[in-house]
Image (tube, rainbow, N blue to C red; front, top):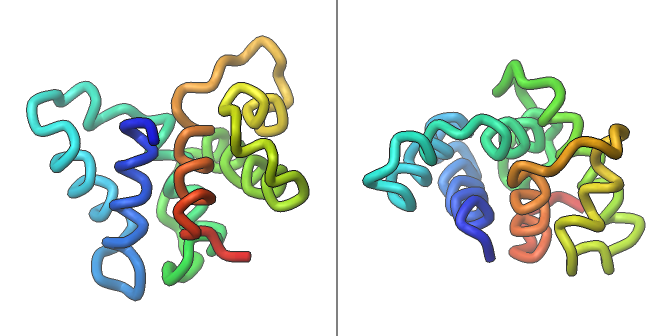
Length: 127
């Protein structure tokens, strides 16, 4: 599991059942995983993907809500969820999954696919 995948899985568990609000859960998980790197803690793309899945009510135990203003990364993550739901074999490659997440083939994923894959593999996404 990638570093941001680990953060997403930890944050999902912290946010489940209202233990922490999803943005706070992400911050806490980042502080645990990246204690000495403010740039890694503040990286927006994986955070937007995680909060987008939470906003859509797709993370187990987290009610749908308005947790992010990042529409693009949120949409990428929801697209990734839908792609994995219809083709679970995409979980084996972030690059292959990313092609289903972004409508722009020139864009490169920036850990958004890692977030979706980690939550899927950890059975933390709603079905």
